[in-house]
Amino acid sequence: MSELINEAYKSFLQDVKQRIKAAQIKAVIAVNTELIQLYWEIGNEILKRQQQQNWGSKVVEQLSQDLKRSFPDMKGFSRRNLFYMRKFAETYPELEIVQQLVAQISWSSNTVLLDKCKHNKERFWYAQCAIENGWSRSMMIHHIESELYERKGKAITNFQKTLPTISSDIAEETLKDPYVFDFLNLSERAQEKDLEDALVDNIAQFLLELGKGFAFVGRQYRINVGGDDFYIDLLFFHIELQCYVVIELKTREFKPEHAGKLGFYLAAVDAQLKLEYHNPTIGLIICKHKNEVVVEYSLKHITNPVGVSEYTLSSDLTSKIKKTLPSVEELEEGIKRLD
Image (cartoon, rainbow, N blue to C red; front, side, top):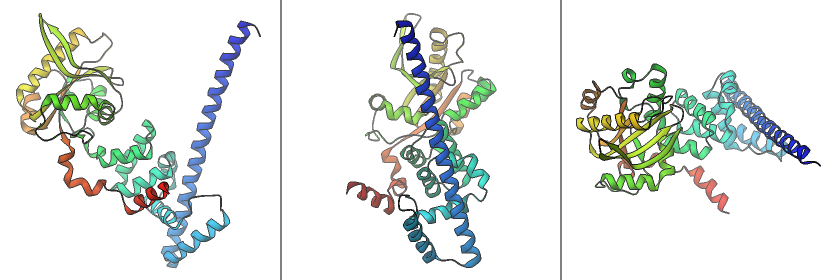
C-alpha cells in the first residue's frame, strides 16, 4: 500500500469509525426512548386499572412476579419499579411530553426527578440541563441537592442595562445566588486568602459549581496600570459568552466600595486582555452576606456589567442535612453493590 493510499485509507477508516460511533449513540438513545415510553404505557395501564377497578398493591406484586417469570433476562419489573412507572405516568399525563423531553434521559435519572423535584417545571428544567450537558444520574443528584434550579440566575446584577439583550439574558442565567462551596473544609472565620486557596485547590469542583462554559485563567492575576501592579482574585473566560469574567472574593458583607474596585479591574481587563471580537468583561463579587438594597444602589450607576452573589459553606447547610441523606432504598442498593 503506497503512502498516498495509506493516508487516504487512514482518513477513510477514521470517518467510518466516527459514523459507527454516531450510529451506536443514536441506537442507544432510540432504545432508551422506547424503554421510557414502554414504562410510561405500563404505568398508565396500572394507573387506569387502579382507578377503574380498584387494583391494590397485591395486584402490582403479582404483575411483577409474572413479568419477571416471562422475561427473565429483562431487568426493571420489580414491584418498586412498577410503582415508579405508575408515578411516572401520573406525573406526566401526556405521552407527547414524555417523548419530547424526559424520554431523552435515562430511567434512573427520571426516578431521581420523580423523587427529588417538587413540580414538573423544575423536573423539565433539570431534564433539559441533563440533555444539554450530558449529566449522569449522580451529577443530576448533586445539582438538585445543591438547589441549582432555585439559585440559577438569582444574582443581583446590572446586566440588563450594561450588556446587549441576548448577552445579558445568558449572563443572568449563568450566575447563581448563593454559590454553594460545601466541598471546602473551611470555618466561618476563614479569610479571603483561605477561601481563594481552597477554591483553587478544588478547582474541578469550583468549575462544576460555576457551571458550563467557564475556563480558568489564573489566580491573583497581575495587571499593571500606570506602573502600579494590581492583583485580581480569580480570572476566568466564559466560552459561550466570549468574555473574561473577573471574580472577587469577600469573606464579609458586601460594601459599595467593592463594586468600585471591581469596576476598575473590569476596565483594566477590557483595555489589556479583551480582544476586538470579545464581549465586555463581566465582574462577579462573591461575598458572605449582602444587603440587596445596598447592592442595587451600588450597581445603579456603574457602567460595567457586575453581579453580586453570596456563598455558603458546609457549616451553613445544617438545615439541609436531611435532604442530602440517602434514602433507605439508596442505602440498600449501596449494600447490594458491596456484596
